[in-house]
Length: 171
Image 1 (cartoon, rainbow, N blue to C red):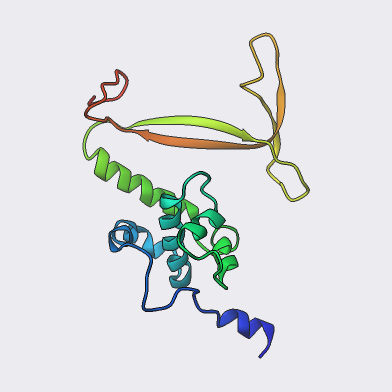
Image 2 (tube, rainbow, N blue to C red):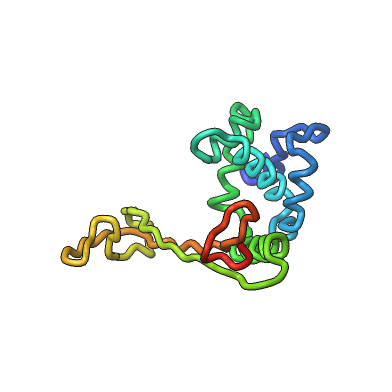
């Protein structure tokens, strides 16, 4: 058996008759099922469950430890979900936004907050690195540049019934 065929015939580390994924979690996440292949989907469920349960940092390794898979022979396959597996993050984000809006804001105005963060990264493989104004270290009279990746985060701001916020519709 060559290396490639051994790689392609890899089975999941979890026994087929036991699933550490609570059925309620699998049900909530089922809307995202068609964004992933079957093997990747099983890994996604394990990683999401582990991320929910993990104390401290939400890393792949920590999620797998919490799920009892730290010594699993397929441990490295879970890392591939984020760096090699084929799935469309924009399709997942689109479905997530639709779900959030359907559940939390079925009617009315939608308020979206935007934030940017500079991740200081170096190296030959970092292609989108740029030079940006560092908002933390800069002031009106002093301009500080930072090199790295700029991440934009969009947040749907929803009214919370027991919290009265002046800028949120419906609150």
